Length: 172
Image (tube, rainbow, N blue to C red; front, side, top):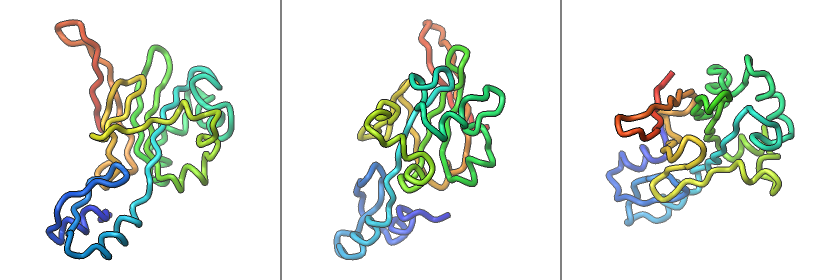
C-alpha cells in the first residue's frame, strides 16, 4: 500500500502537517497539493476496556458484542483487524483487556457510529501535535500507515529499576 504521504514525498517536496499526518508538500503546485490533502482520511482514535459496560466501553452495539466475552474479544482477532484495516494496541490493565484503536472515520461511521455520539465522547482519544494519544497505557504514538494498518500490537507493563511503571510495545 502506498500512502499519499509517500506519493508526495517521492516527488521531493517540503514538509507539511494536516490531520495528524506528515506529508511532504511542493509549494510550487498548490492544486496538486490541495487534491492530495483532500484524499487523506481523518483517523479516529479511541480507547475501550472490557471491564464494565457503560463505564469502560460504550453500552451500545457493536461494543457489547465485541467486548463482553472475555475469551473471544473481536478486538484481539488479528484476521478481523487486518480485514478492517485497523491499528490496535492491546494489553492488560489489572484483570481486564485495554485497547487503543486507530480507524478511518468512514469505518467508525459504518461500524460503530455510536462512538461519535456526545454520550460516548469520553472514549475518544485526541492526538497531540507529535501524534501521541494518552489513555490508561499513558502516552503512545499510534501511526496509521502502511507499517501499522491491519496489525495488533501487544502492550506490556513493566517497572524500571527506579520503580517507575512504563509500557513497552511489541508487534504480535
